[in-house]
Length: 405
Ligand code: ADP
Ligand code: ASP
Ligand code: MG
Image (cartoon, rainbow, N blue to C red; front, side):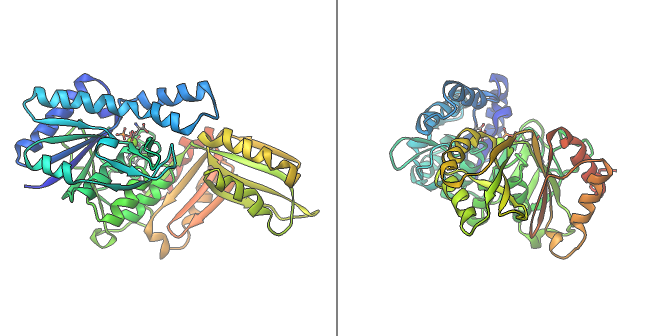
């Protein structure tokens, strides 16, 4: 007997037939004698709709009210899945975030889980009950509903797994594992039997949506065994493992893209000590994460600063940057939201030179201009015009020899 967490994403619970399918899968594990806790997302598209409603009413919406609205999607699916399970004769009960409780910090809209009390869940599981837990949500120090950022139910699942001491956390989604790149863009993408925590973390952080970044971070820290698999087939999935568990290590594990970022340039900023702190300090205070940063070489005592940030933060970032104009006196502020970040990830980069060179050559070969470059120990990222996203990802996938033959 094992104790397992089964997490189902939006596509897996998109309608009643799919919820029935999920219920049948859960029943299979229960019938096999396992103790099962389930975590679900909202129905596919539901969260997007809820977010759009908030933005429509006010681009600078109150994050507490945003959380109240967007957390409702998961409340629907946990209730429906509990009913579907009961219909199959499985004893099940739904749980929203505050009922567990999933305690988070107070960063509404992108809260971090602080702790989960798993005692009651364990007690119920030991009596044969299946807890069906709403992903993506928790309760903040202000005792209001919080949400964990887009894709956050993966993190809920891993956190629940850690809290109840689960033997594994199975993430069921609409693809049957982690591929060398998004299989919806590259047909020749290859499924990986296993991927290291580190590579998965890096891939997730640069846009591979299959797992939320924090879920991988947490799995790594809490030693949770995560598996990504399909809720529509019984194909073997992808295991997230330690580096020494991988037999044949490729130099490049995968390629990711993100269209979620926008490029911001502030031109002719006075080039003096402390200027970067004056720009990025207020953004950080407003909880706006900045990603790639370049500062041009200064010529006449001024410099241009370019950086990227998440598109959803643009309205707030613009307000912060405009407010600092009185102090910083930059010439102008320009924003380009039609960009994409393409990243190549692999632990093999530590010991192999030339990975970046291959990337630049492959992109040049397709006439794709690079706007910004950034690197880390196991990753190279470039920012390009969004219209070339697919072309770039396919070209790189071929250039690194990742195509299925
Ligand atoms: P869920 O709703 O189940 O959480 P998501 O849409 O969040 O599903 O994540 C699954 C999607 O991630 C896939 O449909 C796929 O398009 C995308 N994806 C991006 N990169 C990868 C990758 N390297 N391997 C597998 N899927 C990927
Ligand atoms: N429903 C939330 C979202 O769409 C959480 C999730 O799917 O993981 O972002
Ligand atoms: Mg997801």
